[in-house]
Image: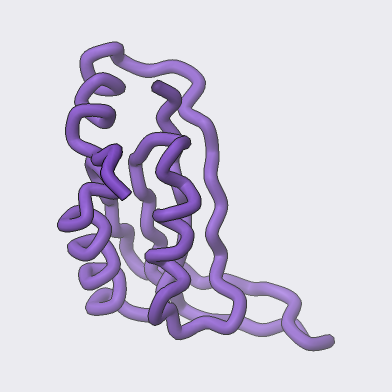
Length: 107
């Protein structure tokens, strides 16, 4: 099993909690951490923009990435949401086994 950390942001806490509960209910993630407000600065359509966002870290299996991405995109308020995955190269074997046990293989 290869575990990944999927990172995204949403504009508010209610959206973060709704996304997290949906992913957990579908068993597409074992654990989701919702952070506190961060200020993002970014290029958008020729301008430098600033926005307050809520960061979300989703712990799941690499094999579920496409389904996690689709779930994030569904109903996301941004035209181009940040959705990136980072491999978990090392970790406690028991914790990595737990990620596997808590996520689904069902389509």
